[in-house]
Amino acid sequence: MVHRLDRWTTGVMVAAKTDTAHWRIAKQFENRTTEKRYLALVHGTPEPVTDLIDLPLGKHATIRELYAVRWGDEGKESRTIYRTIERYDGYSLVELELLTGRTHQIRVHMSHLGWPIVGDDMYDGKRLTAAELGIDVGDTKRIVMDRQALHAAMLRFEHPSSREKVTYTGAVPADFREIIFALRAKGYEAVDAVGSTLSLEKLGLSRLG
Image (cartoon, rainbow, N blue to C red; front, side, top):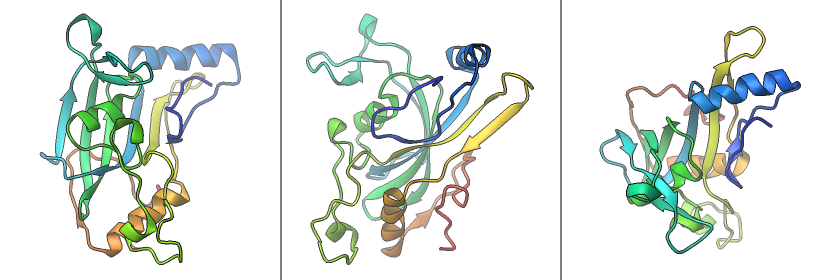
């Protein structure tokens, strides 16, 4: 594997078959020439609908497993662009573009600003039950998604052999899709976010059903 995703984050990853291919792709990650876009369901309504988050991150001061916004020598440059795609009652579907690649970057940035990712109990996100979503499945206490609602939706980089730009996308898993469709059924607002490139249809989230 050339890179990693946070534990329980779903989506696109790249693996190399040869050492040369691995090195060439890894250098692109190191030089920040890849393009990475994620999809997340967050609590709240981000304002403005699109913005650059430029907050340094580092290890949490007291909890070893966590990261936090850290100023001074403890923090490393960390930049994320978020773009709101849909708004629901109390939640938002957000596209996130990583300009740097710090551990837990998206999760910490969104939580710090008051919009934690649904299901991310490490960073103040709450898991949603079937009852809260209005899903009639018999067991209203069922947790619909037992992890953070964060999906690596698109990865673009230069192919190590042809040197042409290649783009890979991955559809969201069934539990993520179930939540989005349930929230839409209760009413939603589509947002025309400047710079958004993700195709909801390709991700399995077509608004046509």
